[in-house]
Image (cartoon, rainbow, N blue to C red):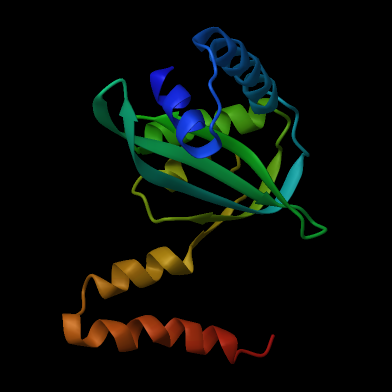
Length: 170
């Protein structure tokens, strides 16, 4: 509560009571829960799965957390966040929980799952979407490739995929 109060005071010059912050937080949490349980479309041609690592300060302690994100691309090209959850670590077991949640919310199919190369990922998604094809995203492919190269070669190697993608004719 104190962190939120300090932030509102510092950036907006607002003095807000802990009761008001608690009321707003509870209302937002209820909406988030409702959003996380909403039904999905039955098919998304492409879904990006990624986990973002964050450092979070909570009541004076610093914790590392992982935000799991599923971003679906509909047939009309519109992007939709399908799921967003926070956990302490990244792993295939938690991804399995995410996939089961998506399936329970009416998702029946994914054509292409764009992933970061996490071991066990295909096995985690297979029970929920057995027909999905896997593609490692370009960012993770590039990062993994650069980790195998020398420092002096990294800049030229990193520019390579961008140049190849911009000159492609599809």
